[in-house]
Length: 187
Image (cartoon, rainbow, N blue to C red; front, side, top):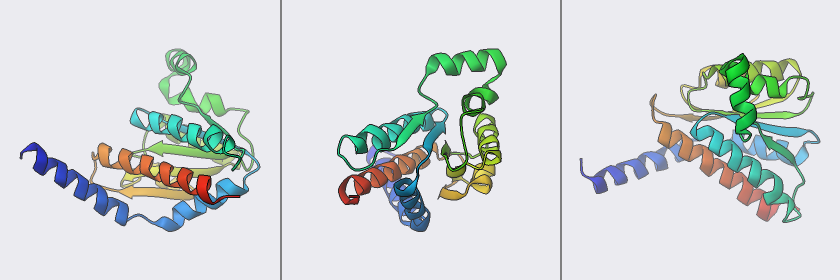
């Protein structure tokens, strides 16, 4: 397949995937963000960690500097020194759990981003946050894995297993939709 044909196919797949989304779940997240009094923690690995960082930026200072919302948002993927120290000292599966331990509280929000929905460090953090009565928002892909099952709000991008690019693209687009809407509409 030549490059232009591949590109058109990719764009068509992205378009179809976006059109098949459950927008009610995204609306639930928008309403939750507008009403929360708690902190918002965001976690993700690899490309999803970049989405977590970008989302934290948009939902915190991106909205605050425009006098829209003043959300307390933190991406736990952002501090490489903390993440590598935890991974080295007590195991990668504890990277997000240990940062949430004794910090996340009832009614805080944990946004967990995982294409597969099966990453051990994501699932361990989600299970811990649920025990603390935090609200779990799962951004998943493929079949959704445990993350989809454990989430209170399920932002699921159903794709063929292994379509990381499409899932990560959609997750970022959904972040930009939320941010753009809240930036424009919320008073």
